[in-house]
Image (cartoon, rainbow, N blue to C red; front, side):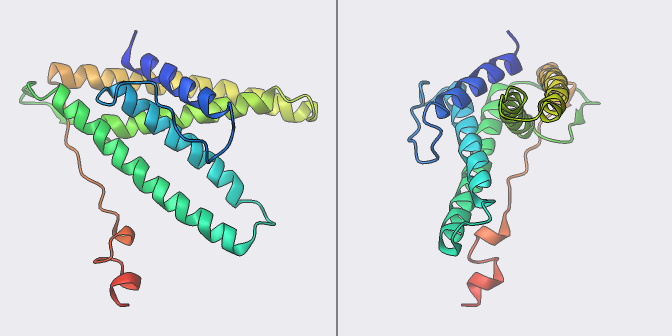
Length: 200
């Protein structure tokens, strides 16, 4: 089984587990060992799944302003958790390939492996929810047909992205590409770089 096939299985599991209760306040019950990459992948998709539903909730036109602001704070925290987790997954890859000597003509990729895996997790969520829409019995046939068409595109995109990630990992392992990770420097979360915070 390829690495991305393994990812997709874990992402599907996390999404199914969340939808048992379909509640953003459901505590995570990660079934994988804390130090394993599977644990990080499951947690990554769980965070993405909860945030997906945060984004649904905050678009309620009748949400109370105070509830909307509280939800916005949760989305901000979730975004930071997501970024931190992507960096942890990249650290796993850096360790995994730490003994690989890049070839003299090795090239760098446009994004790190973990940020590509981040997109794979989001795609799993899009597929789950588009499938849900395609199977609705209370919607017009035009709606379900449109959603089935979109679902097919998303499935093709998932396959293509999985292939690209697996090829990137093969290239890194063979020394044809090398990893260079830039840590995220989100200035608005930092009290020393956000002028609204440091001027108070």
